[in-house]
Image 1 (cartoon, helix red, strand yellow):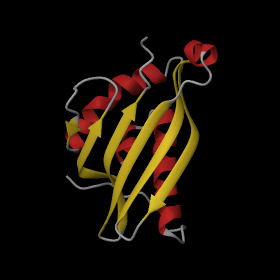
Image 2 (tube, rainbow, N blue to C red):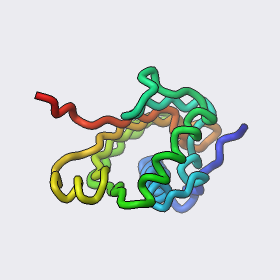
Image 3 (cartoon, rainbow, N blue to C red):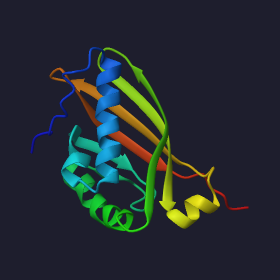
Length: 143
């Protein structure tokens, strides 16, 4: 299986290329576009998500399998909104963090400051940036 590239040819800097890739990913998640969610992700992606498995998922097929339940949930009254995105880029490695509003619309309205935290690691492979690591988390609010 090959990585589906994200067209970032209009970008002039590596930082712009990474931002375009991630912003298209956010849009794909919002639109429940599974192909778009997978685009730009490496075959050897590792993801640590909020729901199990606790050891995360490894590989593009396992990553793909995690998305349909979330996309179905979100197509109801789910909210997935980018609040803040920060990108740091080196020659061959980049990382980004983001804060998002994510949850049922009523919960997001009741707790407008609650955020989903996202950290993304990327590598430049064959001249293209690909996501090799994702980590999603919510703060632990238990007393």
